[in-house]
Image (cartoon, rainbow, N blue to C red; front, side, top):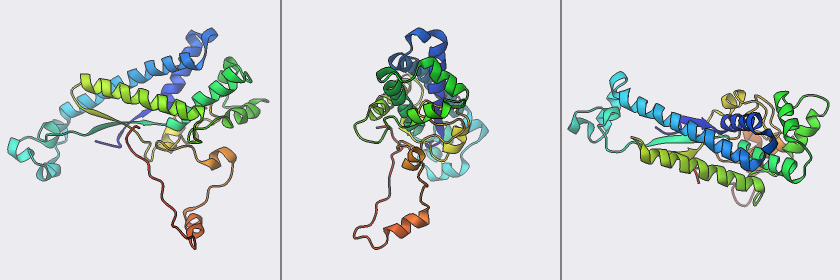
Length: 257
């Protein structure tokens, strides 16, 4: 069961940010925000694990894997359905989505608010609530959008991405060791970047409410930052012709680094 179960890091981040600002606004900072983020992410992992446990406990009764039973070793020998203990190994993945969106948001907060002091925490929350609207909204949005970015190499956003990835991996592994099933952490958005983006409000990285989240563990594409139009697949293929060496396709892992 891979590429199916997702935890929306963007939603977790948004809840953590608003929770922090509601409870401890005078102490607001990225260090405290990370504590709130871990608190809510831990809860998200726990609830997801309970859902998987419920699913696997009853799946064999409500939807037996009749075709899969004929293709697996152990189901016929044991006389049990594949979803009810008939096979030896169960590959259950939990994927985190919106890594770059959240890493870029943490980095923008650190750079623009904490280090450069160009914006206040209460001002930021107001801009997010109004989707970067108002007379100063667009200027603030561009300020945050053009901060350090994940994938640029050695940036503070890269470091935030590593910390978030390590945190997510640790929480899933901890829950796996204490639960009924072996859970495998991964970072993968699959084809849900549009629908998950529609569920998420404005974020501190300059993204507007409803816009797509970042794809898999990759960085946000350059055209989303610079405004340059994205080339179509046909244009990309045509630009590859006549080159001495072929262009390589990008590959992303479904496993957390």
